[in-house]
Amino acid sequence: MSVKSKIFSAMKQIAEEQKVTLPPLEDDLSLNETGFDSLAFAILVARLEDEVGVDPFTVAEDAAFPSTLGEFVRAYENVPA
Amino acid sequence: MSQPDIVALREYLGPELKDRTISDARHTVSLTDIIQYSCLTGRSCDLSGRSVLLATSGQLLSALAMIELDGIARRLLLCPPDLDWDRLQVLLEQADIDTIVTDRPLHRSSAGKYIVIGVDLPERPAMGSEVDRATEWLMLTSGTSGLPKIVRHTLDGLAGAIIAEGPARNRNATWATFYDIRRYGGLQIFLRAVIGGGSMVLSEPGEAVAAHVARLRAGGVTHISGTPSHWRKLLMSGASANFSPDYVRLSGEIADQAVLDGLAGAFPRASIGHAYASTEAGVVFSVDDGREGFPAHLIGQSHTGVEMKVVDGSLRIRSRRTARSYVGTDAPPLADTEGFVDTGDMVELRGERYHFVGRRGGIINIGGLKVHPEEVEAVINRHASVQMSRARSRRSPITGAIVVADVILANGTDAERHETIRTEILGRCKDCLAAWKVPAVIRFVERLDVTAAGKLARADA
Image (cartoon, rainbow over all chains, first blue to last red; front, top):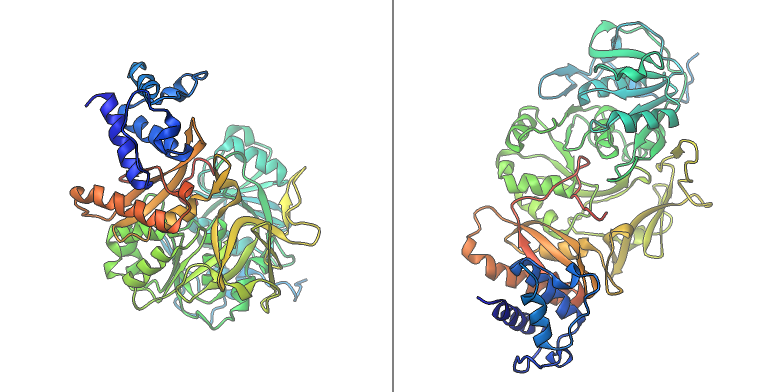
């Protein structure tokens, strides 16, 4: 499974747990529009770290948090696992 | 001259009570005629007025020396087994120790600095030293990091709760504890055995649960005490099946409903009580109704001479059973100006009952919202397939921290049910807890570490 599909699958799982209705997941979707609050993103980042072995936002101290879903996925794709 | 108002431990060991013993895995010593014998060896020396470190390899020799030296020595510092020499040396200075009673070879640097007395099974006639003082009992706090603090008690305060219950209550009981008797929780049980006219079976470090339970049964143990973590470990082992004590006691950690129910199921004949006590605050109360938390009416003046109040969410205690002070230069005050000890244990009123929610220092901060790991564990532990759990903080780049949980499932839980159980646990947490308190990740683990003091190991505590 690609990193991208792992991310999408984790997001769907969390959306179900948090009773959030996700819009269609596309690259230019703003993270604000996903319906996820900061707690949901914190859960997502923690679970992805367990699944793909990396947390790109902690690895790089100065990393800016992405603003779109595409940037979020690339943060994971660009870190050597 | 003997002072009539001082009651020393030996005075509870008269010859009129027969068949009293104290035992570990290797030796059984009769308590009936113990005061006629001495356990001290080597250079014979009057320890009257001495400040003594009691540093024995096992608990039995410490127990015997405590009986022999209470009322004789000025101070008795109880050394738990896991203390290294470097840290011990600092504590010896602080406690003004001049004599070491030990069965171990001493570190070179101590040569000449202290009088060293050996200790062995009591096979020599006693010297007949007279009880002429109230010995100061010094114990170490069970903090997980840094140097432990030295806490000063008197036997009078240590035994306050035992005397208050009356001498007849547990007569002829054989006591046991999973604790080491050189720590507060274990010492309470040792004193219950001695003062109450009973016997005692000591724990052994590293002993397998099944072997320990076999000894408890062989020794006829009727009354037994441990932390909820000790008890969960016993319940998990399946070794409780052939053991049937009359009284089961929990202390040292929060007794949640799951562990109380688990013990009631495993020991249907036993009365089950959870006690609240700490090295600094002493024994405060015990609750015997089988429910977690304690009745709200205990707050305020109590007829047993223990006063409790809640300030800023934490329980404060004033009583004659609290420690007298911390010991050492620059030791901080133990109590506030009104004599209340702040326990650091946080409570919450729910209906007619206060519930313990966690330690003040253990709070996890999730983007400014707070959670005690213990309140999360209490919910997780209620799931029938869960034996034990630990909630902890994990750093998060988004909220600073999040809660995650490590869970031990019951023996024989089908691996195919793991995902279902995970979903069920998350569902319960969502029903009972605010959103930020729900664990972000639940991991199933084989074991969780328990500290030497019998408490669940918390890296952040």
